Amino acid sequence: MELSYKTEDAVVLASGGQDSTTCLAWAKKQFNKVHAISFFYGQKHSVETEIAQDICNAMGISLKTVDISFIKDIVISNLFQGTADVNCCHFQNKDVPSSFVPYRNLLFLTVAAGWAGTVGAKHLVTGVCETDYSGYADCRDVFIKSAQVALNLATDFKDNNVIIHTPLMWLTKAEEFRMAEEFGVLDLILKKTLTCYNGIQTMNDFGMGCTECPSCRLRKRGYDEFMKKYHSGDSNAK
Image (cartoon, rainbow, N blue to C red):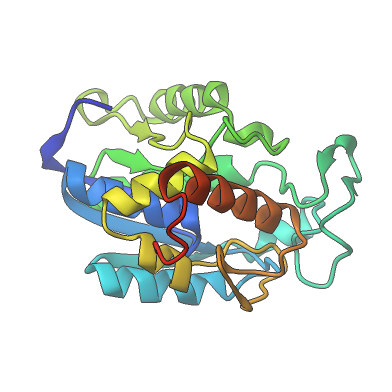
């Protein structure tokens, strides 16, 4: 994105993972002030909300954590605590990962938009990505654009309409690691962030995780590609 908004504020959806932490660093470069919002919804990796707080503290960003755990009583997903393996297919569609939480990002964006209005920000930043498509329909560009339209139709605040930014939408994981490096947060991402669906905090070269769930496999593949493409022969580049 070429435009910057140095006089305006933004709310970043922060999960404590690689994507949202990269977005926090991106937003700090783009906006006057950055707020963050995180969600607890009964996810297996609920420790991510604590990690999100630690990361925001380290970056000097205020974080609001919202409990929306009612969603686990409404929709089906193996990402919820006490449910089955995240590596199988979703109950409602065999072509979708069982870790998919229907309507999650729509709910996230709705709540985040409400909070943004409260703190005087009209920009939302989310780390969804279509390049490394995981089968999550609510990570697609078409969904984000539609959500922005729907949110603004719901309020019609005109000059204060919500603008949703997706700086990672067309990046590969390798390119995302590179962006983090350029923003000076690569070490933070490798040592602090958690994207593992199982919430395993075992340290690996690509960061914390179980190495087996879809999220860990994607992250490891991206890190290996990043090292090969940008740091070939330098195994200590972190």
